[in-house]
Length: 256
Length: 256
Image (cartoon, rainbow over the protein chains, first blue to last red):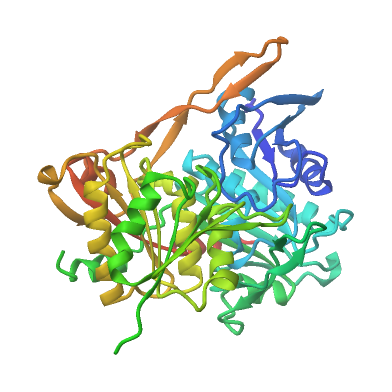
């Protein structure tokens, strides 16, 4: 009999998040699950690691084919600790999420959910980050659960090329409204910040980071933003070699 | 007369770091400098942003053509606040560093220094991250100062393609030992973690993140790791489109 798949589940919203528990539910039929997530919300932590203080882990649950741990650290800390300390062997796949809120386009840069997936693929473990466009704590995860199961199953069957992970986003619509799945490229866009400047009770200024997303190419049908706007589930394959090869040629002409 | 260049300087080691003040010294002859750095060390913060609490800024210094601010936040927070609030206009260039310690190869993923540079290039401002392979607080910055000046000057003269920034690392050798500058690709490698498990005074376990770098391709002469080992200054051009285009074709055959 084939050995059971070992699946590592993590996220950036913390182990109590509905999206995390939805992802456990989605992938549990596919193998033995180790779920290792931050103790509390770590949104916007990107690929951050904890170097200034030590990490602690708490065992939350242990039952047949499911162990849950919480880590006082970032999503990437969770993956590193899971692979190197907590799991009985290297996982066959890492799934991260399901994030409450979108990580499409360049938002991937800020994403702890995708930070964990990238860490998996640097370690040559097939990895997927899942995000739901609804950021409500009590969002409906029916669509994300169905399709994160399906996509994880496909990755287990087919594998992924070396050092590649997937960035999957779910539009916020009901099952009957889903147009399908589209494999896309990352939209080029950015966050236009507008800092909300306030005064504290002793008269000192402080700023809240706020802003809105600006899409440089709203009509490009091969992008994740376009897919999501048209009720498709978007899959962007992401690599960890950030080199711009075209630019190497350009700079070589500068005559250093 | 041409308007003076506006240069934003930031880093991840905090505004008091020797590397930060070395970079200010290096680029000051090239224009008007606004330096906006974290209040304290933010190593390993990658592209993290602060969303759970507000940001505060402190003016550290203001003199002819040089203003220094400290921000209670991450390197990316510094860039966002600088561009949107603190600077009189959009900067012409962003330089980040000089980091105390290497950010070559896949270490770029964890790098706050490069997080700031990537944030600049997402905002379509030419940006450079500089790192020194010597991580000592009192490291000698003679080589980094000379060459960060030169490279910044070249980028001001030539510009950079849209959404491209540079990851520059300096070998830890004296000026006479420098072999030259090499434009490279990012080495494929990863950090092999070995968590240092300890017991606190009340008998509870905790872990320190530690490890060593493993190079998948030590003999590849077009990589940054090879260049640095051979006393070259490495420049890796980095883009913010993380899509793996080859993998789009592969997944499209999975038959979703």
